[in-house]
Length: 65
Image (cartoon, rainbow, N blue to C red; front, side):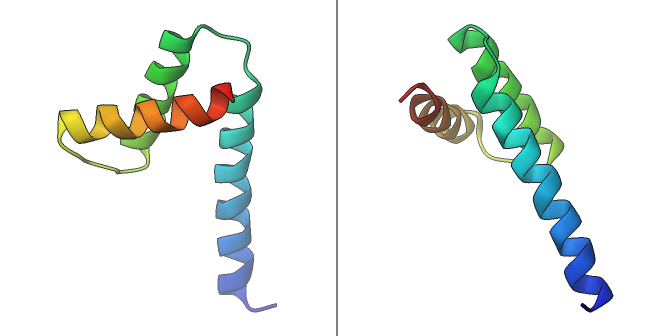
């Protein structure tokens, strides 16, 4: 494998691990939404507040299903 593929694999694994951690965490919905919001901001996803809230709600709804 090329070094770029290894780096991308590590980053992808970290993101997937964080997503699984959020999905399996036994927390309240509001806490989960706060965690998702914080995670997205950490990863540099900068959206208007209303758009960020909309995205967080969509992700939280999928987690709850």
